[in-house]
Image (cartoon, rainbow, N blue to C red; front, side, top):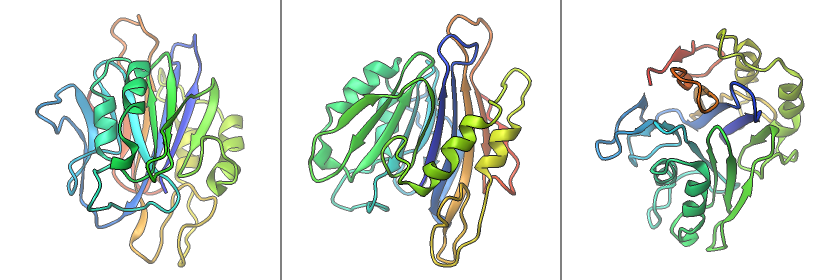
Length: 250
């Protein structure tokens, strides 16, 4: 169960801050963020080597997109399209609102259930597809701090959201200007080992079943009009409690 944390601050020099942990089978091959798609050169994203899609990326227009499973839908279905296509399709657009409208109109029966986050410096959206061909729901993400896992946005019945959303709200916000991400880095790397499955409430997980947190990202989007100021992406190619974050060259 992956996790995305979003801080929206309209009017701030850095109006969107996002953190994301990827939980996956540890032997599933993937590539670190890069420009892996020749026909989509404007997209910088993590790449799944098996299906060819991504779970999280950023395009040159400042649109971030990330996809997460819904409960009971871990893993692929050979008869359906890969959910890793969805962030790529979202990042074909230059604005989050346009991308959200376009992805809301896809055929939900073509994919297993999913949560999809689409955001830019001005707006952010949560798209939820419950599966079974039911209509896709699209909602704006409110100002302030939000979290999403396999559950609904800010649903505190998710142990991870219930435990950590208040902690993120109380923590010092990252400062991309000075490079101070310390408080969020510490929380993204909180780990408790569990031999039976996912440890409830931990941000970084390790299991004896070959499933765990395989990477972590920290992203920040500057306010429009800040000439010469680029987005920031820090990436840890492993569990963030034991792997250093390094800057992704955009």
